[in-house]
Image (cartoon, rainbow, N blue to C red; front, side, top):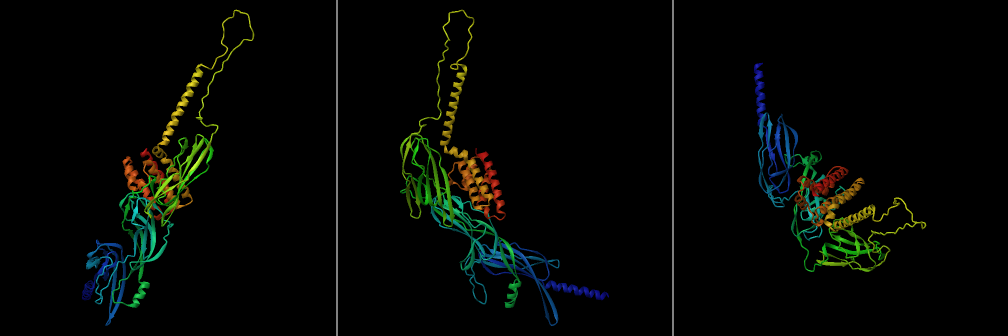
Length: 607
């Protein structure tokens, strides 16, 4: 029995040693790839192992992995049965730079002993270059295989200051993608921007052939850019994250077998979700200043193609009666930024600040619409007056010249009204002689002490008090009127004081759109509230505002850095909140609450 036991131990030891000798752990990979190409690296173990330790792929981007699969095979040769277990650990990598690199070795534990695979040398060539691959003595041309990528496409790369440019971010993909969200938006320094994306959260796709490869293409975002300064302006890359569904296949270990290939496509393939970060390329825009030659005095920065009209509600009236005159600019261009010229009114006309109304629409060709300035005017004196034409000039980049338009001339007939010339406050005073006459002529008689039967208001202490009070009220009213008049003439101060009120009114409009779930109008009103507030508060023209200028000016006003960052973050969030995953109603509600909070904090530090 003891001999049999020794024999069994010997046989088991020999079997284990043989099994360990039969263990094979190797790396399988292509020898040559190109920059941007996605390829598979597999570590194949013939035998049983555990505790796989992946290497560090420092020169490549890891798209997914490790994905493990196992198989077993049984061979019968001359009556001898051999069973082989094979486990494969696969990674999906992307080549990110040119050169010769080494795929590192991996480690796994077999029978309590660590086994190391071989390393592997790989060559990464330039995109679309020709590399050689020994395959029956033939050379194979290998191009860049990009399954999904993001591209920034500007409508033009050369423009004038104030000329609009449409920047479209397009996603090209050959595999299913989902859950798109902007992870990092450019600052668009030097540009006024407006998001005109209108996909309602659903990508409208089409097919296109690019670099010899057929892709699905969809527009992820569209931005209108209006440059505010000359020179070479660089648009930083946009980063979008998404979930891509990639196909994983079992590694072929033997020669080509059509039956194995057919059934492998049906049963041997699987799909896995991988998070991808898509980054567009930077864009350089060459911005030219508008020509100095032939520039008219009435040019105030309007660039595009416009019409200019005017309308008056009446030309005959009485003094102290109001009339309304409206000036309208229509067309395609920087509607939001252009200034409608102020007409010249006679000096005896009281003119209120105009009511500005902007109505725009946008598409892939840019922004078009109308901008109106409505003036309420009160003539204070009678007579015949002429309202001379008002000039509006713009620069047409398609014709490379300035165009000057004029409004109509109006003849006003103002009749005298009953209250003309009155100041509105009339002081009237007078005195009345009071005589006390006896009822009859009496004889002189001796009487006792005379008593005063009544008092006069005139020259009495009460009379003096009333006069002094009226004079004081008049002085106070006059001083208040002058202060209000002076305040209204100081447009900078008026804008500063009314900034919060106007911003909260716009936020209320945004809230109304939030209640009816109108995302496009909500984000437009919300954005106008933020940009309008900071424009009025810092006395910066909207055309000169950018993320960088807002940060610089707020910091210069000694606004705490955390409030500045909150304001900038809110502006950024507003730009791409509609693309972020999640409940759109909750996103709008969160933005609305943060808008009130940030404006309130900023107001305390900017007063």
